[in-house]
Image (cartoon, rainbow, N blue to C red):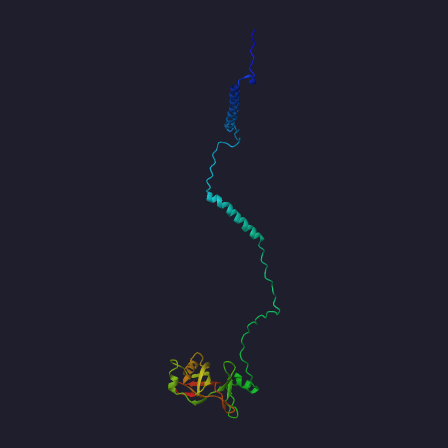
Length: 247
C-alpha cells in the first residue's frame, strides 16, 4: 500500500520556495488593504439622530458679528459695574441766616402837625365864622383834600359874567358853588375839587370848577410870605339876574 506525504518546504526546489514566499507576502498585504477599505462601511450608525435635515440659515457675517456684539455687551456691562458712583456734592449751610424781605406796608398819608389854633380853625363848625388872622396872614377856613391847611381865597381879579356863564347848566337855579384849588405861579389855580353846592344836585360846584382855569387868585400869605402851592377855598354865588359876586 502506497502512502501520501506532504512535501516539506525545505525539500522544495529553491525557485518554488521563493515563489510561494512572495505569494504569501502579497496575499497578506492584499488582505490588510481590503480590511482597511471595508472598515468604514461597517461603522455603527449614531442612534437618536433621526432622519430630519437641519439647515442653518444664519449668514456668516451675522454669526461672526454675534459673538463680537456679545463680547462688547459683556465688556460694557463689566465697565458699568466697575465704574464708581459719583459722590453727591456736600451741603454747605450759610453761616448767616437769610434775611426774609419785609412785608410791604401800606403807605400812610403824610402827617401834618397843626397847632391848637389851626385845629380850631379847621373845624367845619367854625368854617362859617372864619378867622380874621393877624399880622397879614391869610384867613384859615379848613383843611384841604389831604389834610393841608385851607385858606380863604383873595381875588387878584374877580371873574366876569362871561367867564362863568359858559359853564352854567341849562335852567340853573339860584345858589352857590364851593371848590378848593391849589395855587400856582402867576396868580392862577390848579387841581380844583368840588366841596359843596346849594341846592344839591344843581351842578353849580361843577360849573365853578370848570371855570376855575380863568380865575386870578393871590396865593395865601403867612408872616408876609406868599405860600405858592397852598390850597384856597373859592365860592361863587349865582342869582337869576345873572349877576355874580365872588367871595
